[in-house]
Image (cartoon, rainbow, N blue to C red; front, side, top):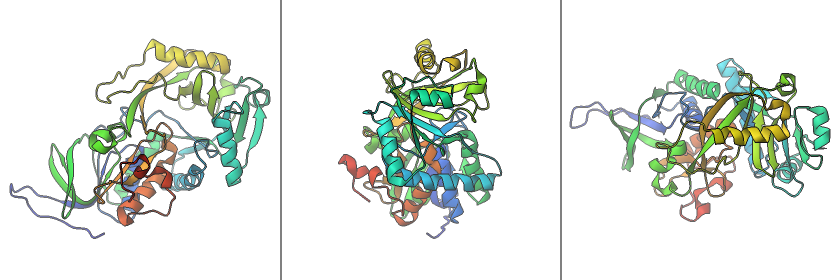
Length: 394
């Protein structure tokens, strides 16, 4: 991909043409920016809000990473590469970004979480151990699950620091020559014979290729995603444990738990004195990200607290923090990673459905591959737009 520079337009404005423009600098966009810049491309990253804003899906102090993936065995190979890339990013940033605690995937024997995690572990030869609820409590006394609950313990699970990870990707990209413009909203984009372009309040910018990592705003940027990338309001809670020693990173594995109240996830205390938890599809609120309620409500707290009281009673103390964030759900809750169905110059990453952050590092690599070659060595057949019937497989 050759670097190209333009002169002036008819109004005398200087136009600089980039190899690639990346729209959105959350978890996926910042990783994509880095991988493109590391390959020697002239890259521009555009972010609508502040660099480390809390309006989207890439904040929250800690985010789970787990290897025994219940959602589908195809994710495991991507996760293995993701772990490798996170460690490489730590070396570049000279700071720790990934903490290992072990992970628990638990639920009924005939549910979706435990059998899926067990299947992934067996197919990929992952180290794991099967426990019941009492076994788990004896080893990790913060947990109080019914004895009949089937629990898969996998020692490689843990958590990432999302704000630090995003910043590490951006800093590494800038060190490789990338340009970043925050507080810059993309108003329009298109393609022409010479590549792609975007228009912001500051004017028009051109590039050979365009990557859209719009998060909850993906469908606003790509109308073809209107029913395929649907924003949903989510609330996270941090509760002060009565027994703090039970909820430390060395005594409390991260969890993905299926119970009669729904599917929940949680992490140990870290950075703030609160045990962190959330419920998948919290209250089922489909929202407009520009008009949603961004303030936690009593009902949000009580939903999370009632779960903690029942299954983690020593962790259900006073609320330390409540934060609103967003899921952007695809119909099957698998990711969308592909070229635009009508414009091969445009690559799209969307629909991460509440479980995507752990993959940011490898998705940055995948998007860079799609931009450069139109294909990737990674198996992304599960994530192609064509599975929904309306897109053309790139």
